[in-house]
Length: 299
Image (cartoon, rainbow, N blue to C red):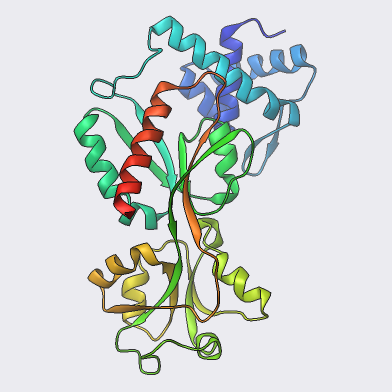
């Protein structure tokens, strides 16, 4: 049985870092100490727990099942021992980790930062790039406190709050030589496009096109949205963006939005956090703050 708190902490950090070296650094102990602790964990739990892979330690099913329960229990113990069962934004120096696309950083992060700087001057935000395929695991493993994205995360242990609705549109250079009006589907597909990597989660338009047997001809694939305005302005290529940022893109480059020639259902930008048995007051505050700011921004 796991009755040693230090052993539990080692397990939790191993699960979060997927590295013996980084676990030793975070806990300020030697690597042999971590290896010895892992051997004890394997013996006590009668499970391999972790195996080596090309991208770090790979966890077993048992390790994945144990992590959220032990993480929650340890958080409760730490909060009780340190007397931090509450959260005061005015005095807290906590760091909150968000997963977000650069599109969200450009359009939604400024009003959020302004609010937090006012009501929680010592709180720090860390925003990491969103890889939608890993978002659930990063929430469960404590590597992120919140995710803001369009793709739906439907896991029962992940809490969702809808922030606002959005629709997709196209953008073209304002002086595009062929498209000065809304394009037909044939015209839209005949042009070359700049596509953003699917890891960002914006795949609805391509999925809608695939359903009617149409595809986009991608001249360029990039991992972020930030360069789109200038790339579209200085080329004949088209791109797809959420309409809520079209006006902002139009201020930074000579690009013009247009309605897509195919029906794409509206999407919802949502906030996701890990659902805990014992709610974290800091995360609850973060949820309220993000919801208030971004709903006001979109209205």
